Length: 375
Image 1 (cartoon, one colour):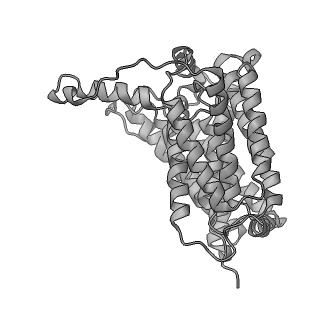
Image 2 (cartoon, rainbow, N blue to C red; image 1 turned 90 degrees about the vertical axis):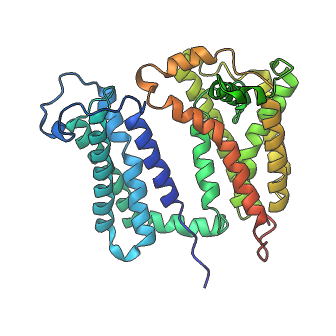
């Protein structure tokens, strides 16, 4: 009997819970007891000021969490029943929503709200009911069968990383698809930490100024940045047919996320301003390389992914941050983006290194029979 696949729902639910905590408690500063009971908001009157955006985001923001929690129960406890899965997922959504609103009582910059609590819980219920409905009509079972046919057994980590890639692209970078550009920021942070200490003299002084990338190198970085998630998808796909389906989907996801990022940062009129000639050629080259590698063995794809990612990180970290970084940061730190700019930026910094760790771990596993080729 074939060993069942591990579900990606649990790590995705945990990752989404971390997103909720970040969005609810940002900026994590000035914690204090404000002299009121932390649950006093439960009996507060309806807030005087609210917008349709606030209403929608509080509902929609918890729908994926309820959906994923219900899937976790359905996958790990199939004997629990559909409606028990809905109940447990709804309870989990209500619990985390209550915890976040209660903790906001200790943050002067945040205002706990019983309306937000109700909307968050409603969102979790909607997501859980949606998962239950899909289970009822057999969609979840169909997905499980399709996953067994399309993807390798140890695909969970790759799924999570692929799901996070578009979110990592939301904070604009100096180069399109250029994630992991940390050298300049890390250098500045270390210098600040060591300032006024004897250890500041231990810090090597950079003898050169970081120079912007020339168009040819920018093109190469775009090519590698677009190809890396495609190769990651190739590692979890069973055959060349599945790879051929994943290739355009992954590239279209990256293009859509980059367009959304530009629209959020600079306005809808500039949604496609980033799609200049080097980016267009780099995308086309990534698509061409992806087609050439459709039948490549998995271990070769993993090795190429590692080489390409290390090369891209090396090139990106020899260039300064975008000239528009300060403008972008100011835009994201105001209004609706204040809860998410830091998280998106951290995802952009960390995602390539998480992929490196995942692929190295995958290569270190003992090769399974008939598991080294895409055919």
